[in-house]
Length: 128
Image (cartoon, rainbow, N blue to C red; front, side, top):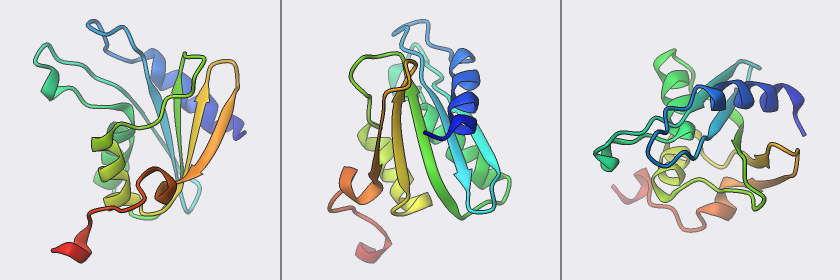
Protein backbone atom coordinates (compact mmCIF):
# COMPACT_ATOMS: atom_id res chain seq x y z
CA UNK A 1 0.00 0.00 0.00
CA UNK A 2 1.21 3.48 -0.83
CA UNK A 3 0.48 5.44 2.37
CA UNK A 4 0.91 8.87 0.75
CA UNK A 5 -1.57 8.07 -2.04
CA UNK A 6 -4.00 6.70 0.55
CA UNK A 7 -3.78 9.88 2.64
CA UNK A 8 -4.33 12.14 -0.38
CA UNK A 9 -7.31 10.08 -1.58
CA UNK A 10 -8.75 10.05 1.94
CA UNK A 11 -8.46 13.84 2.23
CA UNK A 12 -10.12 14.40 -1.14
CA UNK A 13 -12.82 11.81 -0.40
CA UNK A 14 -13.96 14.03 2.46
CA UNK A 15 -14.46 16.86 -0.06
CA UNK A 16 -16.88 14.73 -2.07
CA UNK A 17 -20.08 16.49 -3.12
CA UNK A 18 -22.44 13.52 -3.07
CA UNK A 19 -25.79 14.61 -1.60
CA UNK A 20 -27.77 12.28 -3.86
CA UNK A 21 -25.94 8.96 -3.60
CA UNK A 22 -24.04 9.67 -0.37
CA UNK A 23 -21.31 7.53 -1.95
CA UNK A 24 -18.04 9.36 -1.34
CA UNK A 25 -15.05 8.51 -3.52
CA UNK A 26 -11.51 9.85 -3.37
CA UNK A 27 -8.73 9.36 -5.89
CA UNK A 28 -5.01 10.06 -5.97
CA UNK A 29 -3.00 10.06 -9.19
CA UNK A 30 0.79 9.70 -9.08
CA UNK A 31 2.81 11.20 -11.91
CA UNK A 32 6.02 9.59 -13.17
CA UNK A 33 8.03 12.35 -11.45
CA UNK A 34 6.32 11.90 -8.07
CA UNK A 35 3.66 14.62 -7.99
CA UNK A 36 0.25 13.60 -6.65
CA UNK A 37 -3.10 14.98 -7.81
CA UNK A 38 -6.24 14.28 -5.80
CA UNK A 39 -9.88 14.24 -6.79
CA UNK A 40 -13.33 13.54 -5.40
CA UNK A 41 -16.65 12.71 -6.98
CA UNK A 42 -18.90 15.70 -7.66
CA UNK A 43 -22.57 14.92 -8.19
CA UNK A 44 -25.26 16.89 -9.95
CA UNK A 45 -29.04 16.56 -9.74
CA UNK A 46 -28.86 15.92 -13.48
CA UNK A 47 -26.95 12.67 -12.94
CA UNK A 48 -25.28 12.67 -16.36
CA UNK A 49 -23.36 15.79 -15.32
CA UNK A 50 -21.79 14.03 -12.34
CA UNK A 51 -18.02 13.50 -12.53
CA UNK A 52 -16.09 10.75 -10.80
CA UNK A 53 -13.09 11.23 -8.54
CA UNK A 54 -10.77 9.48 -10.98
CA UNK A 55 -11.58 11.89 -13.80
CA UNK A 56 -11.27 14.92 -11.51
CA UNK A 57 -7.74 13.88 -10.51
CA UNK A 58 -6.73 13.11 -14.11
CA UNK A 59 -8.18 16.34 -15.53
CA UNK A 60 -6.47 18.37 -12.81
CA UNK A 61 -3.12 16.78 -13.63
CA UNK A 62 -3.52 17.19 -17.38
CA UNK A 63 -4.64 20.81 -16.98
CA UNK A 64 -1.42 21.44 -15.04
CA UNK A 65 0.63 20.05 -17.94
CA UNK A 66 1.30 16.51 -16.70
CA UNK A 67 1.06 13.67 -19.18
CA UNK A 68 3.00 10.73 -17.72
CA UNK A 69 1.37 8.77 -14.92
CA UNK A 70 2.40 5.83 -12.79
CA UNK A 71 -0.45 4.85 -10.45
CA UNK A 72 -4.05 5.75 -9.61
CA UNK A 73 -5.60 4.89 -6.25
CA UNK A 74 -9.41 4.78 -5.89
CA UNK A 75 -10.70 4.93 -2.30
CA UNK A 76 -14.21 4.08 -1.09
CA UNK A 77 -15.85 3.10 2.20
CA UNK A 78 -17.11 -0.29 1.03
CA UNK A 79 -16.26 -3.83 2.03
CA UNK A 80 -16.01 -4.93 -1.60
CA UNK A 81 -13.44 -2.85 -3.47
CA UNK A 82 -14.98 -0.49 -6.02
CA UNK A 83 -13.49 -0.33 -9.54
CA UNK A 84 -13.66 2.68 -11.87
CA UNK A 85 -16.85 3.02 -13.93
CA UNK A 86 -16.79 2.51 -17.69
CA UNK A 87 -16.41 6.21 -18.49
CA UNK A 88 -13.46 6.48 -16.11
CA UNK A 89 -11.84 3.37 -17.58
CA UNK A 90 -11.95 4.97 -21.02
CA UNK A 91 -10.50 8.27 -19.75
CA UNK A 92 -7.81 6.45 -17.76
CA UNK A 93 -6.83 4.46 -20.85
CA UNK A 94 -6.71 7.52 -23.13
CA UNK A 95 -4.88 9.80 -20.67
CA UNK A 96 -2.78 7.36 -18.65
CA UNK A 97 -2.41 4.15 -20.65
CA UNK A 98 -1.73 0.84 -18.94
CA UNK A 99 -0.95 2.27 -15.49
CA UNK A 100 -1.37 0.55 -12.14
CA UNK A 101 -4.84 0.96 -10.62
CA UNK A 102 -5.11 0.41 -6.86
CA UNK A 103 -8.58 -0.18 -5.41
CA UNK A 104 -8.75 0.43 -1.66
CA UNK A 105 -11.23 0.83 1.16
CA UNK A 106 -10.91 2.83 4.38
CA UNK A 107 -9.87 -0.29 6.32
CA UNK A 108 -6.76 -0.61 4.16
CA UNK A 109 -7.92 -3.57 2.09
CA UNK A 110 -6.47 -3.15 -1.39
CA UNK A 111 -5.96 -4.84 -4.72
CA UNK A 112 -3.88 -3.69 -7.68
CA UNK A 113 -4.55 -4.12 -11.38
CA UNK A 114 -2.96 -2.98 -14.59
CA UNK A 115 -5.42 -0.89 -16.57
CA UNK A 116 -5.37 -3.49 -19.36
CA UNK A 117 -6.95 -5.96 -16.89
CA UNK A 118 -9.86 -3.59 -16.24
CA UNK A 119 -10.25 -2.62 -19.90
CA UNK A 120 -8.95 -5.60 -21.90
CA UNK A 121 -9.95 -4.47 -25.39
CA UNK A 122 -9.88 -0.68 -25.28
CA UNK A 123 -11.09 1.72 -27.90
CA UNK A 124 -8.33 4.27 -28.50
CA UNK A 125 -6.53 6.39 -31.07
CA UNK A 126 -5.57 3.25 -33.00
CA UNK A 127 -9.17 3.00 -34.21
CA UNK A 128 -9.39 6.60 -35.38
